[in-house]
Amino acid sequence: MKAKTDAPVIFFFGTPEFAVPSLEALHREFGIRAVVTGPDKPQGRGLRRQPPPVKVAAQRLGIDLILQPVRLKDPDFQRHLAALQPDIIVVIAFRILPPSVYTLARKGAFNVHPSLLPAYRGAAPVHWVIIRGEKQTGVTSFLLQETVDTGPIVLQRAVPIPERCTAGELHDLLAPLAAEIAVETTRLLLEDRAQPRPQPSGEYPTAPKLRPEDCWIQWDRPAEEVCQWIRGLSPIPGARTLWDGKLLKIFQCDPVANERHLSPAQFFIDSHTFVVGCGNNTAIAIAELQLQGKKRLSVGDFLRGYRGQQSGQFNAPAG
Picture: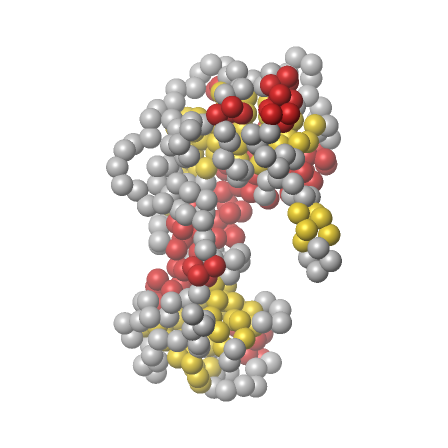
């Protein structure tokens, strides 16, 4: 779809796959005048520069103006945006916009965040709600202001988190919901019907960017917490441990009775189960895993080809 000459001027800021359904829905409903996304980045063994998912989607949709600034405060970039006189700026999974950019929008600039704000402000809400064992989450649209993730709420919708849900599965569940909220919020702003309300004050859990050290499984935690951690990092970046000096990623698991009284990080393997001891005399059964240099497998497929030791101990990373 191409934007009509009398259509509202809407800018879309986004980079990863999560933002694509929102871009598609907004372009279908209103037409997107310009897309701002991240620069192409080297990827893969050949380090060939690859476009971000939002750029690929924008090209497929026939959106003519795609901008990939390195610096959002670049004067030439900002002058280019200002000359187009945007009505609405929509931000989904992008960098922090400076006020000199988001104040260009005549009707308003908003972000769609995958959590029930003010809970889980930050870069990784989809991961942290699972890591912390939350039973529900959702999406929130809010008007941009200088302090990140704190602007007045326009719309909010809650959804239950399914049992055994991984971060990847929750990502796929929330992305279309974010698209619905983006369309509804845009319509409210264009029609001057939005009624933003301040975010509640108080103490709420946050969602900071995941660090490399967060990926190592802490086997001395109770099994339920270990499973939450594993699911919250699955499939990317992946919860991991060391097994005979090789990296082992675990993507899915379940708490089980620690019938063999395995100590934390001690494992036992038989023909159909791969059990690991955790804290408080608890244990997990691994359901999906990937050994360094091998494919990701269900535990059944892994065990059919396994000829190694029946019991042993996972190692902690050096340092």
